Image 1: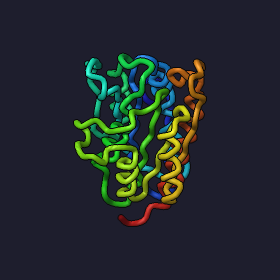
Image 2: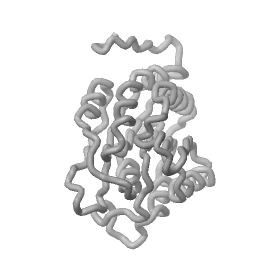
Image 3: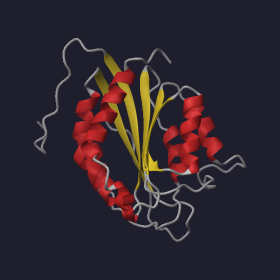
Length: 233
């Protein structure tokens, strides 16, 4: 039992041992406090789900992003290293205060690009990128992220194609760029779970209408199952 009082199930003897690296890209602009709190409350349920189909050796990484394209947004991003400690990941989350941004698009493509470049383990590791946002994305990467002409959503799509054993899990509004990401993953026979929420629906400001514990448990179970299918890199 951890210090929060939540009991984490230990892996059952005889389960396949697998590895999984999971990056959470969370929009940390002013409206997103409900999402950040929901992830905090559901993270142990997620970890419990991770052990449902395999004995998963996992690492977690947090990228809390804002609008890199807006010169007036002076709030820094939080780009953390991988940790195998749930408490360490929670400490990273506790350091995030939802602020900045507005009704405009955010630098979501930049967050995905940075996540793709993570320091993944190279041997028999399932890779998952989780994206939570309530806003559209700028159509191009910021020059500080990627300073070449091919800096749109197709650049991010091509970067995804460089990864083996990767899954993209998204909860976000139904905007064209996100649909394009979904279609590209399907076309490449890559694992994707996309939960689209209505655009301009106040119930989903900050994704506050999302039921976080069952969602995160389902995500953990999905990662656990797919991790068993990873072959040698």
